[in-house]
Length: 417
Image 1 (tube, helix red, strand yellow):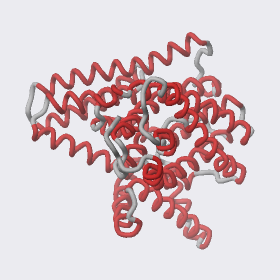
Image 2 (image 1 turned 180 degrees about the horizontal axis):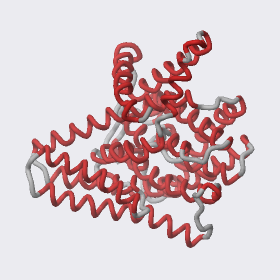
Image 3 (image 1 turned 90 degrees about the vertical axis):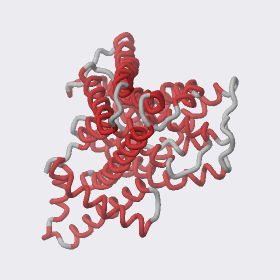
């Protein structure tokens, strides 16, 4: 079954799951979708054990295995989700906190990659470079998961900007670091890159800086076109072309598609929305992208829940994944604390910034997609299992309790710093 065959089934499932969440669980939509999908996966497993003649598990696993989750997310859904998220970020507020966001999205990701990688090497026994690959794919916070939760909790504006801004950029940086480490750890799988400082720095600049420049240029061109017309249907189509075209071009030029789309989204969401659109267009366009965001979020978290059916749940894989949870949280704490402590010498941070940003740094579908892109083998199965366990913990446990952490450490939102 390919993705097109699965889409009708997927929409029926997310509609049913959405109704169940609305009437029964009454929790944030993304978290509710994931929990119900996990429950449905568990039910399929139970039915398969009790009534093996039905072969229900075989049929469902076959359908899930037929979907290339990595390609579906990284080459399809991600560009739309990142653009939709970036549209609503205040660029002025982002620039005021650019130092903190830049440090956490770069130095913070590198620190976390090293800490998680070394810790995972010790608890799982995999080769150190393979463990660093795991550290790279699980270190970036997921903008889809993070911004989905931010819609449901009250956060001071300054903290909200840092959390959202970091999540939008650190996944792009994380994907670049992941690509470098995969090239070193799995050279026989066709991912090899030159292992020297100059080549790695050039690769990072081409991917990250090149993606940002491309996104800025594409966003500006789209802005000029949007400013020259007043037809909301055509203007929405132009933004769709901007997203898909920019992401595809970035991929062809070996630049970071996620970073390019985020920069383009920030440009359109701030300057474009304010200066290039009528009130009618602005309302229709923002509503359209909000709807796209909600639908794709629901589909993504439903797919994550069903991906568990395809996992190889060996006891040692489960143990390694569970032990990796506190390692991930500890690494996140350090990668947030160090940049904030350094910058706090010159600027003041909102009370509770460290615990909120630590616990609010959710992992999501991007980590699962990256794990699925690794070459097949025992190491991939281990990393995929550990990644899925961390993502489920992050979205369900952290996602449902981050509001409590905010209330305990920050209190009611006050005037932004």
